[in-house]
Amino acid sequence: MLQYTVRTATLDDINMLLTFEQEIIRAERPFDETLDKDPISYYDLRQLILSDEAEVMVAELGSRIVGSGYALIRDAKPYLDHKKYTYLGFMYTDTDHRGKGVNKAIVDALMLWSKSRGIHEVRLTVYNDNAPAIRAYEKVGFKKHILEMRVRID
Image (cartoon, rainbow, N blue to C red; front, side):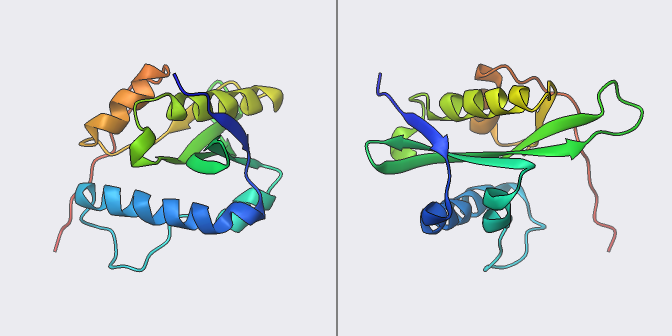
């Protein structure tokens, strides 16, 4: 199995990360008819990289970035048994490296970062029809928890 290096992203990585963001949007567009027309952006990557409450990580093979993800500390609902949780997002793996442990390496690193911040609850969202992503998250221990539903009432 290939050995991927996971490290904290820097502002020097921003161009590649912006490319990854557009690939995520392109891949998710078939699952969400409510996405606006291009160009759109999901993330303020610069702010996430600079934030003390977030950690953006990249996976590298040699000097090539092949994956990304972030962890963002959020306040939990007041009725839950935890005050804070980590939300994972910006999970992307280059198509040539899917199924080779990149996602797991990034998730593991983000979970370690969360633990180092005293956070033990980690959540993410995924489109219900995105079976490959659901399988990838289940492989690293995530379980389906809640389903958000919507309706358009034109």
